[in-house]
Length: 145
Image (tube, rainbow, N blue to C red):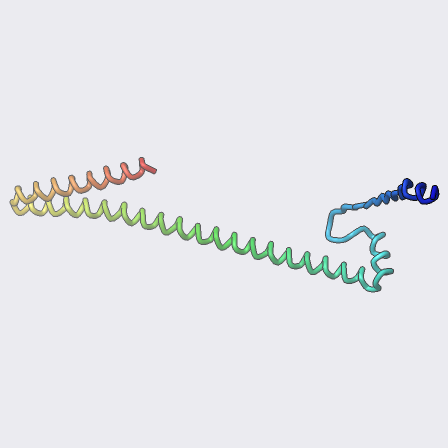
């Protein structure tokens, strides 16, 4: 009976298992050369597969970079065209406003030459007022930006 008591009082020994993990970190598309042998021992040809995967990955990255550079060049080209178009439209607008003003004054001159002084003064005054409003509107618009 004493053996039974002793067995019931005894506790089984606990085993403690300690496990350790080693992690290696390396940079680049390929593992260190020491590991290639281990890969080939595990499965022959694995090292060649890893090199091919890295090569394909690099080729894809280069294609993506080339495409990005192409798209950037296209964007710059489009921006240049937009700037030239805005410049030309602005220039045409300036020249147009000068021509309209000169045409108005020329009409006023012709009216004066024919003796229609009232009509000439109305045309000259209208031309001056319209030109002044356009200049004021443009300068007001520029100040907002």
